[in-house]
Length: 435
Ligand SMILES: Cc1ncc(COP(=O)(O)O)c(C=O)c1O
Image (cartoon, rainbow, N blue to C red; front, side, top):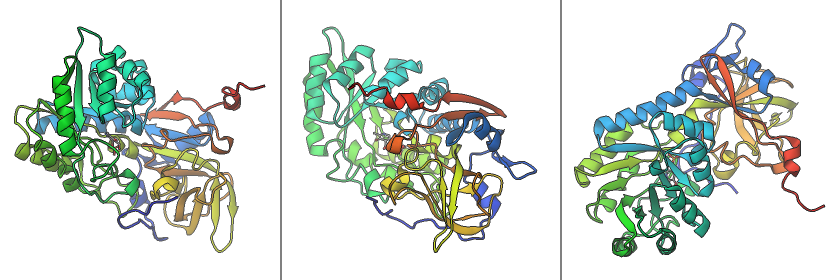
């Protein structure tokens, strides 16, 4: 089922300028003399020949720069601060390792992301554990691994922590507060509204705070809030600060992530500087000057710096011309899940062309990659490039219709590096234990 976007959808006419389209690709993307796109300095046709299709190509330098910009721009505005990358946006060790090497902390949602973060070399003290339904096993894993911060979402988290933390140890905790902010993102991505399943309403949060303060082995470090994801208005993100501040003075405030990205021509997210000006402006107004501020961006750190490359398998003319490719909702669920708009281009014929609908190979009519998108003379065998696929696409990749999960290739200054290989056919059988 689709949730309609709560704002204008993006649509492109057939006058697409190559520059408009290139503006959606990772910074540094260029075109060779024959028109072929280069991402991270690598030709997409050469990457496709080497690693096959579909493949997720990440412009490594662009991700690093964005991680660096986040850290520098936050600490310039609020020196006692930390950026924790929301691992859920791209939870593989190569991405987590990159973030760690840029000095970011990691937000981990659940045991699996703790495991990959530790494998990526993260200092457990810099991990922030989330989850609205943490299991006993996950809490025990967090405690035994030395995860620095557990974000308490409910009273059962407190019960489990009290049981898991051994004598002589103290576990740092934040309490997740519902700020009561209605944001204009997709309904499925909103988390900060009254009635959200995430966190506790302020009055209930007070009770959780009191319990943590009374627990000998738990330390009440502060408060957490998160308004939602793909939010294109900085004021909506900053609106969460005052309700959280009203709960009192604490050493730490984690203001979550949520900054939206430019997926299509009609998306105008605030710049990183404008977002931080607005958020930290609210923090200066409402939070204690001596507090530490954490933020947890995911999507806006990684989404714009990756491209998915597909091979066109068939072109079916008709009232709607369907251009079908060798991937789809197995490697990009955001379209089917919330109706996120993605743009697309033939990799060596960028801009202009006739309106077509790009669809995937899966057995759903909702398996659409890009509806009504202009493509220039699409043919079987062409490579199709879809930009802004760096967030939540790898995360939600799946085996629907026996799809093998796709590889991730880091491209940097013309050097490609495989960081996640394509799943093999035999791996599709590896968990089937019945004979
Ligand atoms: C608790 C929490 N923090 C951070 C994020 C990251 O959000 P985004 O990827 O939109 O920056 C999420 C995802 O929605 C989240 O649930």
